Image (cartoon, rainbow, N blue to C red; front, side, top):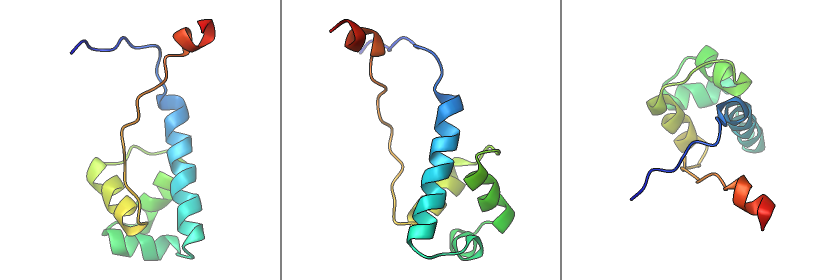
Length: 87
């Protein structure tokens, strides 16, 4: 299987988007940062950093938070904007 070429990094946009999703889901469930952190086995400051998008988070921590929030983490292929623009 060929390896897709990089079309630029989406990391700059991904962190704030993920942070916003975690924050909005927590609020929708009516949970405090402390409650989610306790259930995920994290310090509240770690969850706060995740929700602000300003910290690198271990995958295990992110998966634990997702589990507490009743969510899954998934890899979604980026669309090929070059071919979409010419179609």
